[in-house]
Image: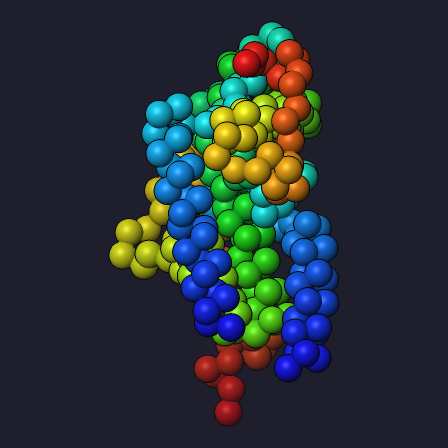
Length: 148
Length: 116
């Protein structure tokens, strides 16, 4: 029993060091902002796409705020996952009962899709490949349904 | 083991209740910091992501890299301000040493944009 407690103490100490370093990088669903944030909400890195600035000052503020929140949630979730790996699922559930649900559990809502702060970047339209009426043999071999 | 967890949970609930009552009187604890020219304003929470980031239209002229750097700089200041305010608000109900250990330092800096 003492050995188990000692093991848990060591795991907890290691975990505290890991959590202090935990940071996650998340890209906003619109692809125009990328944030690396710690589990405490500190912004470690921020990358803004020039196209985001073209959407106006308000959109920039809202998209960055939203992306930092997503990155922080991801870092907190990683912390929970590492804790479960280090201390076991039982201990992780105990910690959740004290500290509150992990982001995965508390933010997962499949009914209401998340509302984006800014419209998503328009996807480039790929021109349709023109159908060429080519009697050449090569064209025959390009058609997989024509093969025997 | 279950007793330990239950005891810890009860202690957390007691502190949470004391903190909630205190915060209900003092209002939400946030740190609000703006760049000197008003380009970026961040409202931060202690130990969490920023609540609001406001960018002025003029700030867009800084370009993506310049603006990103300014947002990071102001967000860091705002979070330090929020942590400091939390420390000063809760030092009467929670051991100040524990607050500092949790990362909520009692920093007092006029540059952070608030005074006691």
